[in-house]
Length: 258
Image 1 (cartoon, rainbow, N blue to C red):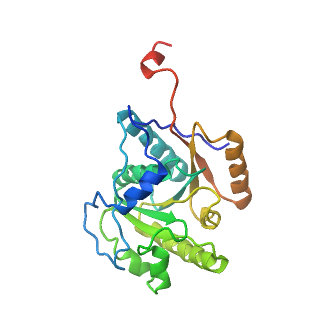
Image 2: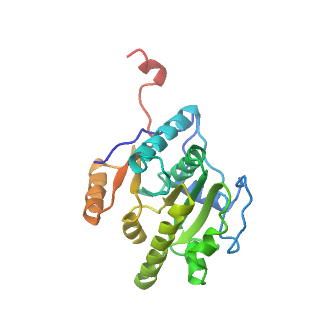
Image 3: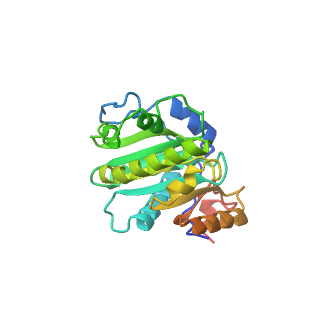
């Protein structure tokens, strides 16, 4: 199995935000990017949205996760890297992890520019999406011209089950990611669960690595091993597994005496 990143903890008395809740919050903008951006094409560039901050312990663990990703994917800290986040199943907090990592990375790199490509299952959103904009004739440079300030930028991407359209979207996104590397410190792909879109396999080969998000109490090791074997056969670099919803039966205060 690939590297196991530091486990994450929920807030005291609270549960970690589920994927369903995160998707709902994507539709209700509760935060704005500090610097205004020129929305071109119209309504394509979105704020990150409200993120789950957890407690101090969770935030420290998330920072460890992010540092691990930086070391694995960008050891020279030169930026221009792309990482895909994919959940082993629904409701493992993939969107929450991606958003939190984006915030930390934006603070670490000199240009403070991070792009989150929020890939949705086909038909989930009627909003303007990156693939739709490019199908309408907007070039990569047209799209990136709206991201000329510092900040975290988010764009929706609609996947497709149709083989022909899926291949076209994949080609366009590969071209876009290659160009976006020059414009952003990091490009993060927030993908649906494993096996739900063919885009994961094609895009997995052009990013610097993939981080799998797993539910500690639900996901089984054989399932992760099977995904790792599939990625190896496809030439995809598995950066590691992020254990989410990790809880220890022994309280932290008691562990100090053991």
